[in-house]
Image 1 (cartoon, rainbow, N blue to C red):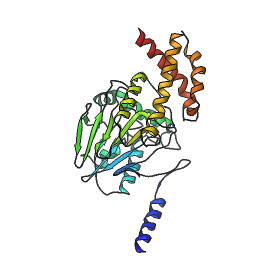
Image 2 (image 1 turned 90 degrees about the horizontal axis):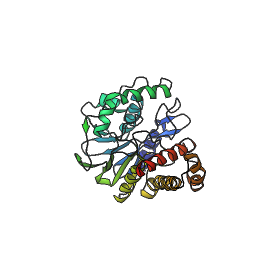
Image 3 (image 1 turned 90 degrees about the vertical axis):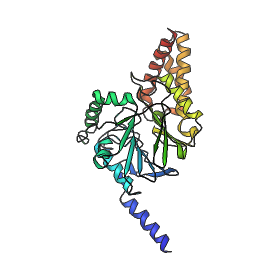
Length: 317
């Protein structure tokens, strides 16, 4: 009976002290797989209501300490993430992985380094270069603008350790393997992080669930397809997208992969028929009814058709 009372008290305490974001709900680390915990952030763009928070911070609790994947979009968000870590363990954060250069995933580094100055931060070597050459400050300014100054205290805090494809990183009791099999996918700075112990893969923004991502000039949609096929072939137990809910490959990889394959197929057929992107769009959309409620679909769908068509044309030249 005492044990039941204690568990009930802990549950109430956690609920009362949850990280609450008005209009979005409560956010806390929840078990995904063994010693892997996730917070699945809001799907909206950074704004004043969500204080810029929109990604999926993950943690792995090892014997020697905590490893965190993508600590968030700002100094303030990183501090909130640390508080949520401290609710489930008193172990120090010993390492961080940043999946790519987009600041909504890594500007929380500042809070981690402030409290845990010895923590190593791992990232793709090109991410470190680009972040230091201006992308970090660009993202700080963008987040400050989008949140109307709520994240103004953020200072770009860069990764310390460059990774390479197939590298295995031992962090005490926990092993991680780095995957970046192509030069470009969502960006040219992507890494996917496999937690070997639990057979979990953190996809970064190579993967989305219930949300559409953008493809900028550093991306390659054909290679994003290859990366997701590669990830599926790893045959792991759990997959964590950069945005949206985690699960097995059928839940967290296949839907976005299927979307990209439809876009690719229709762009190829349109190119063969000498169609423009705006002519391909009404044909392709008939096959994409399952995605119309994904956040950002209306904004990104036409852009995706246009970029894929350009890539198809370039491959034919």
